[in-house]
Length: 260
Image 1: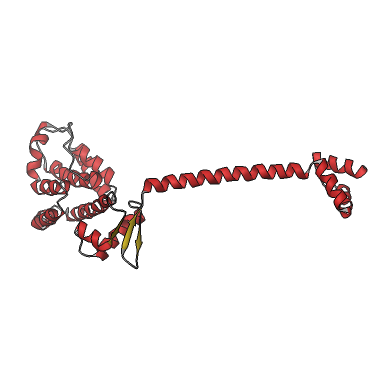
Image 2 (image 1 turned 90 degrees about the vertical axis):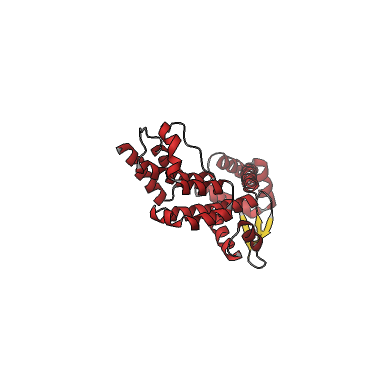
């Protein structure tokens, strides 16, 4: 019982933090704790598992094989409202899902699960919008609202902005005409990688050119030509030598030139 309570309460904490992968993991573990009879806690853990499964995987997962036989055979009977909702979710029956939320609202409220049911509904809408990106490159807010059965284009825009800000969707919204352009995140990533490679290659070229320029400017031939071209340069170079300027190869070249 203590082990079951640990995993159940842990799943509730993760749900409160909206860390749904963790909530799924802990609620799943809770229903696999060995038992010879079903308990109310395990049934509640199953309800959390169903919703976490929908939010993280877009469908109701099958019960883990590690579940005790009595769980495999009977637990769904104690949460028919959740199983019905999850079945409609898995089949992408948005209208039926809304009907079921209304129909079973009293049960969901009594279980203190209406909040996560609402989150599952929002996630369903987001997943429905993501599926549109595989079919359309551009779509109006009105069409998105109609496809996903949202109340208004404004509601569609709010969901899109949330998804864009969280990185779940790559899209641009034109506020003037209400059109949404979906972009391929894979292509965008590839483009950024390509740009970074080009920048790196350019930096290497610049470094080589700077090194070549330095070699040229410190070569005896180059300095000789510059001194012959500009008589005042000799005086300046002599001043550099007297003040201790110039190092290594460059200083040696300058001294030899000025002696010539």
